[in-house]
Length: 149
Image (cartoon, rainbow, N blue to C red):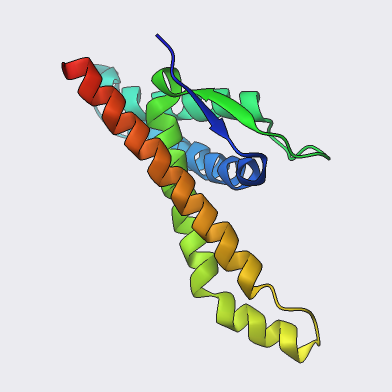
């Protein structure tokens, strides 16, 4: 069974950026395991970071490693990519919230240079990211509930 989630074109770039971060996190975790003295006896310690690393690469293969000249929506199978997509959405929201927290400082610098405000666009972009992430989480919850029934 598959459950397809459509990532809106305007959010694919933020997700791509987050997936690069997920990839880096997973690589760091693999590296940390690789220097433990008993790594040969516990290959299972590689399992989760390896799954995240491979999953992030797989999603980046699907949505593109770099932004195309024309943004387009991405179709992702939630059943197949659930863990990595959810982690990517968490990172995406962390990055969005950090951008929002910095919006006043950005606005002050832009005003000093007599540049147009980006406050409203930033707030809207962060709101859209949060709404999408919540919708995906709700979809995961409802599909998990159906699996239990």
